[in-house]
Length: 53
Image (spheres, rainbow, N blue to C red):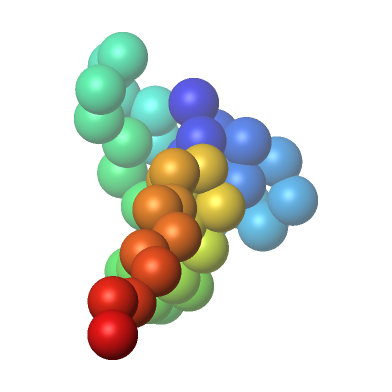
């Protein structure tokens, strides 16, 4: 669903094959990876680690 949402603005999906596979434009792979990393990092819980002295 995340990839389909990104595709709404960037249009890189060539064919939606099934529920878990899409065929994408090869020139968009790096952009897609970077955008997925950014979105997944936003949705990852971060622990604040306090250093001990």
